[in-house]
Image (cartoon, rainbow, N blue to C red; front, side, top):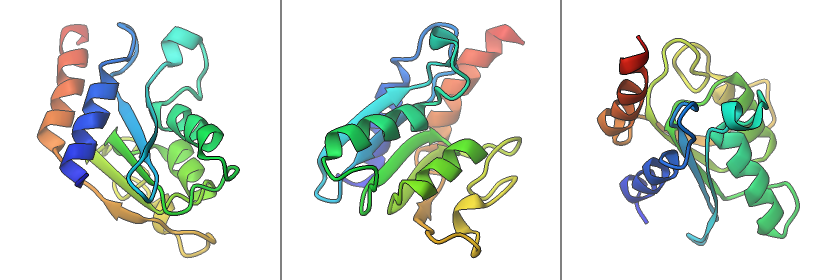
Length: 149
């Protein structure tokens, strides 16, 4: 699948978020194109501050991958630019590529506010593609936050 098709899968995963959770979706795809995991934010539903879509998808992907926690060659596709926690996790998981939709200028750590994934001091730096279907991904957030403002 190409990046747009993968992002559409992440957008669909965002639809799995509970009514009180910010609708962010993530998909992890193995190097051979096999979907290893998909998840949506679940912080409110679980009461877990680490239950971001990326973290949940990485956990599941590592579980089903069968090669331990290293997700070398895998691609993480997420509807919103990852935060510092999620960017750090995908670096530590050795994800080969990260593809994201909407930019997050307030907390983004893949080029907006910080650039954790390209920090030369780290031992792994994934390829990054940002802004894939950005308008559609941003619309998810606008629809969620609009009535709450």
